[in-house]
Image: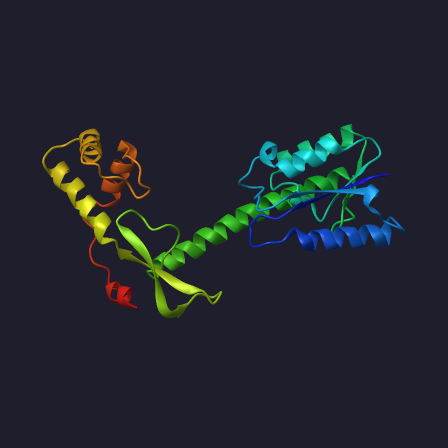
Length: 246
């Protein structure tokens, strides 16, 4: 019998070695007296979020499923490593069943091949994603309300870090500050618009003058429109302007 072990972590800050250790130890203690290399194969998806990356794009998981042969056992640390979507989990289970293989979840051995438990835990994995998204939105809203930096700096601003203030994770707190070089371009956009230029004409004029966007590429009308929409009034000097000298 072969044991096909699948490991997945969602971010580059996590390590599959923890899952690897627990899976191997579980097999040694519960299924094999002498586990050696020919009896198991490891597949990994590093820095792959199941809620962001579609099932057919998770190369490690696809390789693991394609490797399965009748009589093999598919091993994962938990069901949510396979997916955060009820439909995807059901599709994976069907593939494993069609290949006449069994499955072991090291942290959830009681799931087994039970239809009710499989469906219930797939639903829990899906609901956890919704909860995580809600917590993230609430956290971001709270930070914005405090004037703290969240996400990427919008055009016209740059990110600065507070010299002494730290986040809950002991990292420097980030804030936004006006980016002088980008503010000049926003001022030009507003000036052209006030002269009656259309978004398309403003875009063409920026490109004609050889002015590039933040990434050094030509301007697109959609980006110009978004910037003008977000900056109905030119950005004002931030109360945190003095921090740039720190």
